[in-house]
Image 1 (cartoon, rainbow, N blue to C red):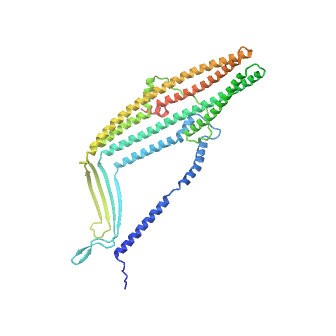
Image 2: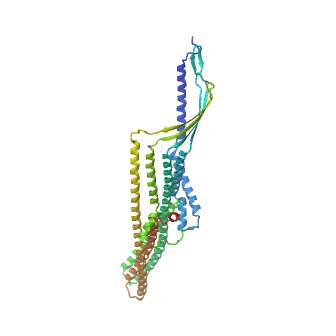
Image 3: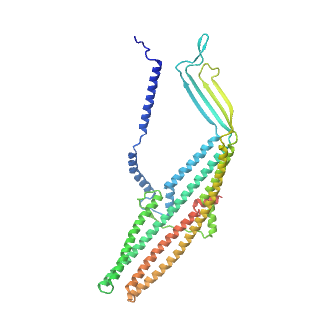
Length: 477
């Protein structure tokens, strides 16, 4: 006959274990299913939503009928450019890391809760049998706290994080400087292309008028067919230049809008702004200004100090670390004489031998400190060379601008004289064509020279660190 207890206790425990394991596996599968993502749907939704959101932001910054100047473009770029936004996030992360490091100075408090119910009440054997020594169900609550008493590396670590926060701000400033330079270059490129378009259209109109005249003269036998073809080739060249200019404008405007953090396919209307200018200074003064204002050198200064803090941290690793500890424990075990128990003490740790890791870390920290000093010197040399090159390009652009403007004056005078002489029949048609071509080329060269002056001016100001932020930081000092 089979009784009620035909299943052994071990078999029951095995059944419960199997059931628990099955429950854990089921929960794991369920969580895995919840965590799966349909990336095809995500990409499709983002593709549908992103252009509309970008266009809405663009319309908010550039409503129809609004024209913007250089300052407006820079302001919009600093507010919307993605690189600038990334730099802001890095700045906030550095601030949070510094605050995390500051928490090392504050007490650390932990609260614990434990509830135990064994399948049997614990008992001890005695002459009269077994006597219980604790309650079957026990709840234990603990509160523990520890406070650093002597741990000098925390001070140096916190100081390093403060310098790292300063570095993140300087990196953000350098990012803004580069965005200013990029926007400035693209802005003047757009204006230059607009002016080039007007010049090309004027030249094309002039060339077409000349072609009509030449065709009329050719019908009367007063000019050679080859000369007519030369004028027609000039017209075709100007038409091709006009198409190239239109495509270049579309590409440059798209790049400007992208740098401003707006939709590259949107329209933008630009206002003419005051040309950039550089204060008349000696090259040595410009180099000195760059070394005082460039964010990279301020970053190098702080990097050296961080390396010194790392060296100090490596030194204090040889010192003992003292912690103050305290705790309060409450237990519901009725067999204990005291249900509440408080503890206080001091914990000290001194590294006696760690495989010479502390010694080697100290030596490595000293080498990193030397490396940081060398990196700063290298950066100084690079910035000095950048200023020299930028100043040279600026001076060359200014000279080319003067030459181009004088050539335009000469070409305009030659064209006027040629037109007058051609009307009187004193010169050949080929000479008139050469004068027209020379004037078109000279006009184009002036526009290119003016653009190069603005670009080299913006570049020189950038390598000198002559930005609103750079000037304000210099005044603060």
